[in-house]
Length: 518
Image (tube, rainbow, N blue to C red; front, side, top):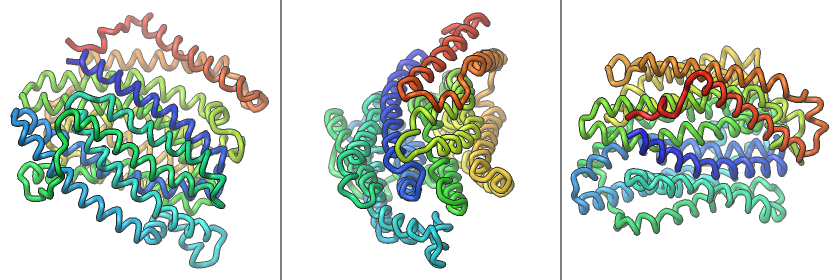
């Protein structure tokens, strides 16, 4: 089974790679257009709130609750029942999200005041950041409908993933990035505030994502007229699983919103610096962690339905080993190359070397949490596939409370970097709690062989780190490089680091069979 998972994971990773590359291009365009100034803070703020709700209504809690039930219905073999179930879910979800979207558009000033508290206080007192509150209120009216489009996109993608059509759904973020880049280039000159062009890019990109998936659902014969099915037994099961999952699976996003609220008190630039560092963190997280989590959930759900506990445990073990293989060296590389990467990708136009240096500090703090973020992505499906949403929720509450405590303790001595440190610490706590619960329930216990493999990966990553530190040019020298030299030097460091890491593993006896379970 892990061979099939490996192939599916490669497909999703490749599509995600295309999306993340375009995402970096998009962020470079935004950085060039607005830097880390007030307009950048406002756009990133206005984009973050609907993206947070996307995690609830789209690929987050909804997917975790919907896919296990969809797997049950699909295994019954009744195609008409399957179509009816999808129709009722799409109709019910569509109505609810439409209402939420309308409320969000109308109540955008309230949302801007709630999550941009520092700006709102300045607005009331006539302070220097008052204009940010006004811009955020208007921009949210444009970006919020993205929630409706992406929620229905998430539903369509979940259905296609259950049919093992992973590539189609994984490609959709490419369309969002293309839309934002196009609007930034072609529409921004026509706006007094360029950030509004980016907001329209979010709106258009969300619509394109949904329209792209519909033909594939039609080809699969699973499109039918949406119906209201709130009291349907299968939908009740989804609702029952989703209510606690709404909180549990989105703890990280809630923490990021709380970080945004606190960062609004820290002056211009803090939100942008956290955003740009988070974007680089999201590259390996999406490429490896989310890709593996995407393919593992339908498989674990099937293992649970067929009562194959051995395959269930083996598949989680495969996922854990894969995220360690990819996540540990990625986190090491992000920490060492934080400033060179930010200087190479973003430092141009309005984004200064100072901005790159500031963002590198939060990226280094985030890098410590990368493996934990990945582990949460692959351990949580061990509960959701078994239709247990209460356990992750309990841990989510603890971790969110811990994150707020960490924020309060760390933000004063470390400013905005303390917020990134707190996020990493709470992610580590979440991953450890999830593993401890799976271990206690005898669902998954990491073997001695897996622990030894992870130890070898850590050693190989350390050897890679020492090599890169030895050959990397000083930052002062890096600043004198033209962009082409920066790109080539960064690529050389990444390639050398990867070769040293792979060679070290081979010398220690690690082979392909170490990751593929029969």
